[in-house]
Image (tube, one colour):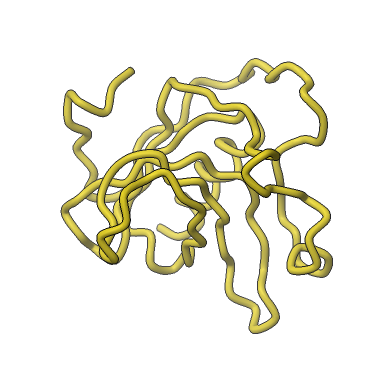
Length: 135
């Protein structure tokens, strides 16, 4: 299942598409803009996202930056909504944490988003999006 979630997240980064996530088997959904997928120093795969809507255990009100551990993402789905990389909010693909284990990151510059050659990925995991998430 983690490989399927990883495939969805890599596609989201490549095509700058928002994702709906369930984290730690919670029932609440988080809507994120995934910017980078990388392996940290301990070998764990992390996804750096800008959370724009949804649940926050800490009670913080989105938007904010949030790293997600791949092994704790229980469901993921691509959304139709695209995003512009959040450079003014602090994103840079040249950060030191990405140097050794970067798997993928949103493209530098403001190049147009490539069109997907394949149909959109199907949701993975126990995920049933609500009507409020569709855009």
